Length: 509
Image (cartoon, rainbow, N blue to C red; front, side):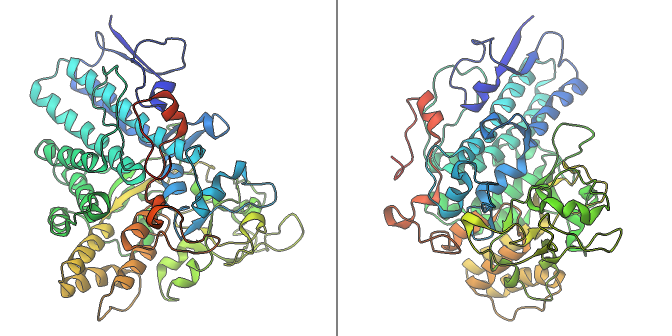
């Protein structure tokens, strides 16, 4: 019997040692190639493990063994480093060694545990996929069937590498489960080319049409469009026409008439979602608990008279000014919770422990000592009274509205303002807003901000529109070379210590 063993530590530091050497470490996965994986059904079960890793992983570096969901790694770096979200310190809560303050103020360094967690999340997913591809290669499937299965896996791996490209820029590219030597970094341009080549190279082997929760041609073209949308940031060369071409190939989806359909508890019914991470607390150990991290401790009494909603952490808030930046008629404004909180069952006012009514305010007095009720809260994903703290709303990775907005921006950048208006107004009209008669860069930026509020796109949008390095609430102008040092995060120090072939990103040395 041949058994391949992957360790949790191995996955965390990007294959920095041979895959079979240290059997004393905690097992992450065990792959047996002689007695399993001989049939198509068994292979599909194994492939399901690649999607399961998308949900999150046990991250002991963050102070416990709880399984943290994907939304944390997307949210903390993509939203809390932007001008949209913040995690202020409230008394003794949410300080945690200053990790969130560093993200807010753009003063992070290579030892920030949130940055390490994001690195580990993506490379754990990549290592898991590499092990499954190895298993598929050892199976009894026909070569044609192997290619189809591996195309789906390579697509998922390309998604992880896109995240690394966006967050860290230059990273190692590892595609073999059997690689034993320490990997060196590839340049950001090389990582871009790898992601592009993988997505285009698997296209004809992927399923066509609409399939919820699976990697299809539509998904590949959607991520290609996103890659090309940001090509000028990643490589210095704009690819607007390529962005438009890829977006035009995405079909079979519509804007749901109700903006919030894509965020309901049973959001798998949405005809707008192109790819989402399925969450079901009854089927696994992890769920979508982003709302639990945003609500005040006593918000649970707004859903049940006895406070049976399991846990509210009073952490994440909207930055001051975000709520008021929405037009009053914009239905997307309801993505944020503000004002007095009322018990849904009894109609009584929810009280804080100090005896005052729970009234969320848009303003936050001070990042380092915010009051418990300060800051609008995330209310985008549907909340139900009988929810677990890990809820069943699938986490949306990409949806059709983004396709329309990519078409709008690409058209605008190429000078086709009439086309840009058509696409942006389709998105605006669904939100209850009047059509624009002209389009500007500021209008595009605002539409991206409001349509995708708290969906993990804002940092990338800030960078693309040149606003990431400017000052905003509790953050000054970014320091460093050309004021753009923070455009990528540093390679985590723990990773550098384990792999001397890796060099720190410029301006973090």
